[in-house]
Image (spheres, rainbow, N blue to C red):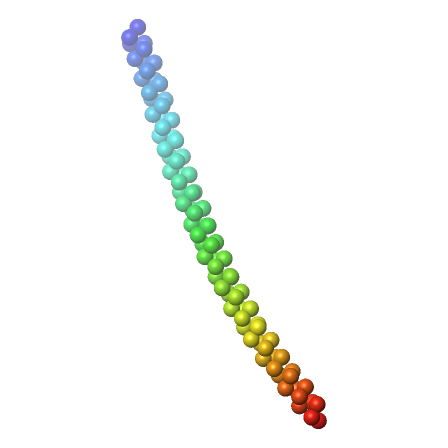
Length: 83
């Protein structure tokens, strides 16, 4: 009777050890995927920051060009009115 119970417990233990090994391997894979997703999020945030900075610079340059063009048009109108 005791040997039957020991065998059952031993078999149960073996199954649990196998299941633990499988779950640990799965956990390693999932942790690697999580790390990759975190890295992708960080890269995306950096790219978003770069894009925003580029857009701010382009907007500033565009505004400067608009002012310069407006100044040229004003000067041209002034010259044109004299003629």
